[in-house]
Length: 129
Image: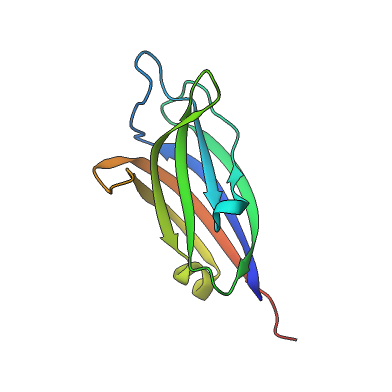
């Protein structure tokens, strides 16, 4: 059952860990509720503070409580190296209808900060009619 519509805007990033040796990252973001429904921003080339300002829409099932965000550095072969990731609880956006904050990225094992991403979300509840 769908509980509502979630609109997620990937605004920008700052202080991203540098995965390229001689240039800045070629960064993009994957955002998803479930592994089989990933959405992706465009790649911002050679930039230490990428701005995407891209919005993605999801139907939010009542079973999902987190959204996943992962930032990658795109290599020449178009494969991405993970810079860092985070999960954001959807409790606040479901209760208030909006979310606007910077979130810290960490590595797979939760080690040191890999940078920050600015995320905005709005939630529209589906009526129970």
